[in-house]
Image (cartoon, rainbow, N blue to C red):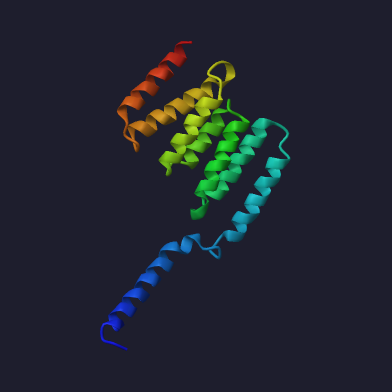
Length: 164
């Protein structure tokens, strides 16, 4: 072995050890894998057996909560929350659970809330859910996404929604 290859080999080994240490939460043999899988199966059974759209949306939120706890499942959780919002666009509880579940992913939450605003009617029984989406977007733009013009526009939209 040459003199320069010993430090290179040790640096490579240290780097690989660091990479394995960093991705270990995403590895499939982590703790709690069996309980998460069973909870996901139970939530999937509830989704299939849901008698109404509201119950189906809540079961989808339960499944998204289970999937979102794993490091690799945050994209799947976003999809499940989106399905829940589409199943019951007038439910304020679905919007609140999606907002809480995606709080650490502001771009995914922004996309979901805009889609909710596009899907739901801004009249009748869905006004509280639309108001919750507008409030969550306003808080998101005042906080992590930092866009004051959008935050003010959403505050004005919420105020005009209350007047009707």
